[in-house]
Structure formats: structure tokens, C-alpha cells
Image (cartoon, rainbow, N blue to C red; front, side, top):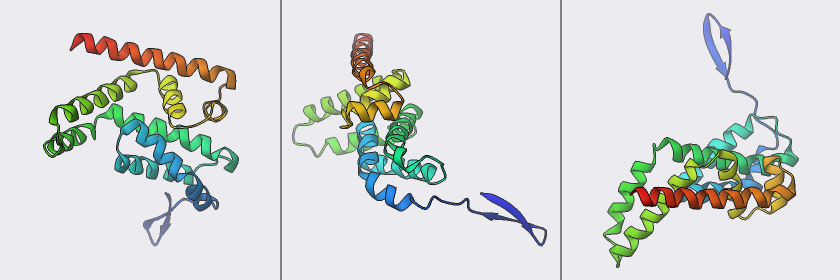
Length: 179
């Protein structure tokens, strides 16, 4: 917000929003939500993340040609931040426990929810670049798109994703043996 004075009172004016925001929003929104949902496991939380990402993008100077990559990375980062903060994790787990009683096979539902929780927690412990590369690649982005989004060479994307998968597996094994 920009501020000015009018009659001794501070008046706020909104920052200018990019002219191409609506067009970029319409074309990129599904991908941004998909990336965030891949990390969070919740479409409604992913839509919240998408709103945050597009608000930031709307005030940015990111060139329109780089928007999709920037938005995808921002969605992954923002979703990982939500995971790491744990603000919403408690609400999600309570809601999941409440909904388990309506599932025909409660044991399967509990195991599935626990596995997802473990994977998300392990993902949040990975180095940020590895976690983002893994999320973007498994969200359907091509190697070239991941490379452009993370400023990597296309040849190094496979190595980065593979290392992330190994690190994720090690994190899962490390924490499984301590439980």
C-alpha cells in the first residue's frame, strides 16, 4: 500500500496491479492449485495458497513469459511453508480423524492418512530445492519446465529429482525406525 496525506489524515492507496494478471490467472490457476495440492493434499488449502501466490504475482515485475514457472515454484514454496509452519496441519488431522469414522474400513483409512502425513512431514524436512524439484516434477511439469522454473540446466533436473527421491526415502526410513 502506498500512503499519502489528505487533510492531515494518512490515506492508503493500493499498489498498481499488473495489467496481464487476469489472463495469467486464467491460464495458470489450475497448474498452481495442482502443485500446491500435491504438497498439501487438500484442494481447499491449495486454493488458499494459489490466492497468496497470485496476490504476490500481481504486484511483481515477473515477465509474462516466465509467469508459469515462477508461479509453479512460488506455489511449491508457499505450500511447503504452510506444511512447515504446521498452522493448518492440526486442523487437517482433526478433520481427518473425524471423517475416518464414516469410512467403511477404518483401519485402511487410518493407515493411508498416516502414510500421507509421514510423506508430507519428510518432504518438509528435505532441502528446499530438492523438495520443490520433486513436487514440480510429480505435478506433471516436464524436465524443461522444472529446469526453467528452478534455473537449472535441463540435464540436471533428473539428477536433482532422483536425489530428492532418495533423500525422501531416507527421511521416511529414518523416522519410521524411530517411531
